[in-house]
Length: 366
Ligand SMILES: *Cc1c(COP(=O)(O)O)cnc(C)c1O
Image 1: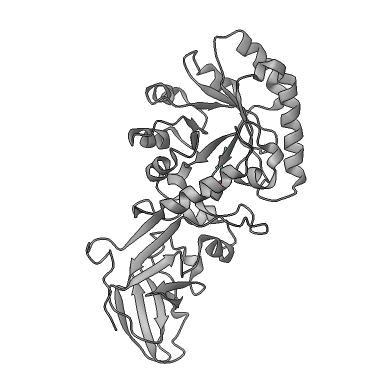
Image 2 (image 1 turned 45 degrees about the horizontal axis):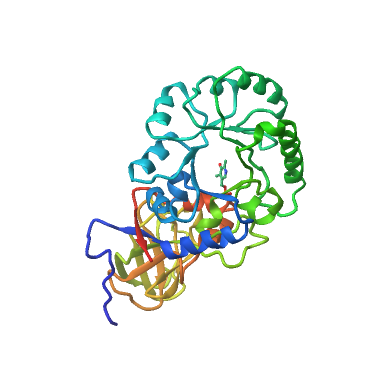
């Protein structure tokens, strides 16, 4: 067998790395932009380390493709700003007295969803007002609009946007989205000319793809730009996964028929074969619940994962020996994709992607 050295064997202290395909990322962004009417702004959501893809990396790669970035926290925003990104950054988390100075220092846009948060704003700050039209999380109740308008009129504050967030836009044809849309449209009507010049936004990926009438003046896409359809039922053709997770064979040794593998000894070899040990486990983000259910690819060939996944190691079964150092694809082309893992775990690809430990290097490829 021809020996192939992986990029890992050169660096002995690295057990796996994540490849981020920037060409695919930009392709997805372009495909999403084609789906919104001309003149509508686009925000790439890069919270949770850009859904595990590397926030600064993704922010830079998309800088020429989107009008703004969205993050969960001030900390995430600072990290992106410090990497040299100059796009507007909207922070979804409620501002707090302790971080107002960061909004100013790093030129961040706040999301204000309560009267307490409003009081933290000053005339020099940029902020959007969030309404809870049915998400059941953050934001003013639409009923609070008259009081909010009164307070704004008495102040020097200048909100630059109005937003809401859908609870069920990942499902096409949801009644709940339509109820939220009606509430939001009614609110915008009540605002009359007040809303002029402000950026108005509601849609996440699901909203953008399944409810084109809800684009308003900006859409906020996350999961779709990373290549996954918000709905497993109605997948969007053309979107491609951006991330691959790779490792290498740590050890390969013979396994006799009947020998068991790993904790709890719940799997035994059906015949003589080979045990392939991959130095990545649930501490890295391969969820233990996937034990005995997945496949990985070694030198382009799919192998069954066997035995319980352990903290730092995962085992595969092979009919033939493989070389130490041979490339293993954990997630990505030739192996399984994050949405397949999600289905096995009864969760969504978001949780798989952002569960890949941040300690693992993200490497751009194009
Ligand atoms: C996470 C998030 C998004 C993006 O959602 P996707 O389903 O990944 O497109 C948009 N808006 C807000 C407020 C969010 O928290």
